[in-house]
Image (tube, rainbow, N blue to C red; front, top):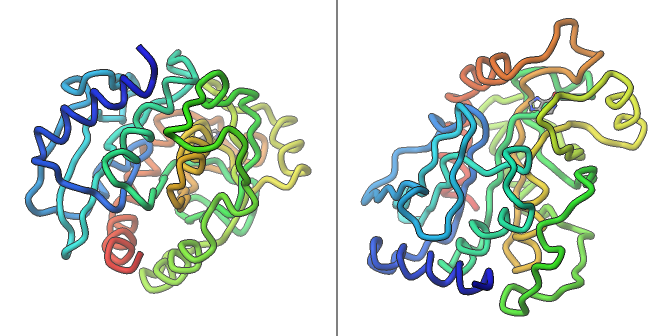
Length: 273
Ligand code: HPA
């Protein structure tokens, strides 16, 4: 089956379950951030496992649900739990969920994630609004996965992270009293954290934060014309800058501290974007 056929099947299933609910804004929640989702009305929850063709999330802290609902009149869909390359999913398959969102009507995608920071101004608990990325995964979900139904094969990334959305996000962060700045996301495959030498190299390359997701989602979204806002939360300083060894438990623990602040931010953004 082509990916277009897989996506169409997922969309048909979802539309039947939601009675053709058309989400405008999509949110992807990263590690441990599932508790930040603002209270939606007319909520419909579809487990990933129930949706034909959808992947399954295998990481602790990543619940797998597609949640539809309204927030103050805006139509929202949340991907509660995401798919990572390091789980062993073929890179191409990471495009399925994003292309499904596009076909459901999504115009704006908020990608959230936990990150390690290489910027002393962005300590744990800070928000880094992405202004660009460096793809060091050395792979891409669009390779060998072209279908004109999802946009052109060659497309521009001058402003992959929408300038207006970034401005709105920084103003909202200020209002919610969150320490925030803009930065460049460096994508690695994981699952290991980086070495101290890698972190120093990434810093010299101009990266601000490092993580194991975001980029495949953003590339897929930009190809099909979805506007993107990258909201990343610093859970630790990068390896070698951090005084303690890194762990997934630390990531989860630190994101739990951020949950409330992130919810405040999303409540502003769901209305303002
Ligand atoms: N590196 C990669 N991914 C991460 C980190 C990190 O330091 N922290 C949270 N996600």
